[in-house]
Image (cartoon, rainbow, N blue to C red; front, top):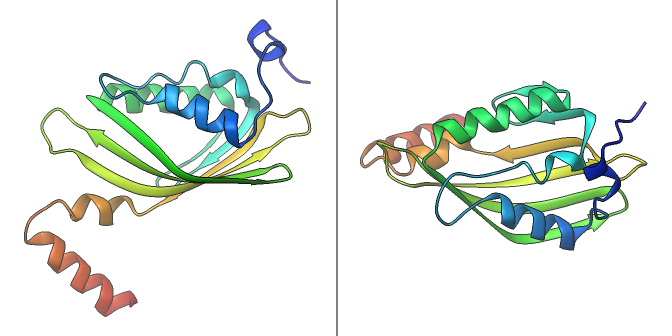
Length: 154
């Protein structure tokens, strides 16, 4: 059974334009991110997965977003490319995180959203190389890390 709150009944249909608009409102040029306006677009049984974790359920997804907000001083996102085929939306992004004690760290990734029959985000899979992007910003270590990756995997 689907939850039906006022915000869910009044939501706009998700497509490439609304995703770009909603995500641009989430990440700020100044200050902490705010995801509250996109939570109604997530199905209560959302399955979120990235290179760090797998989370099932909207409440757990919201808790994860709040943890990220507490950890970062500022977070920005650009969406250079986005496409949709049926109920699947794919987009590339550059997310720049600013922590209190560390330099800005751009992370490059992609997201795959799968929409349910009622137009809510039922699955979200984020793809990115967290450690490679972070290690790129550490002088001297970045070359050692890339050399190791090339020797072992390239």
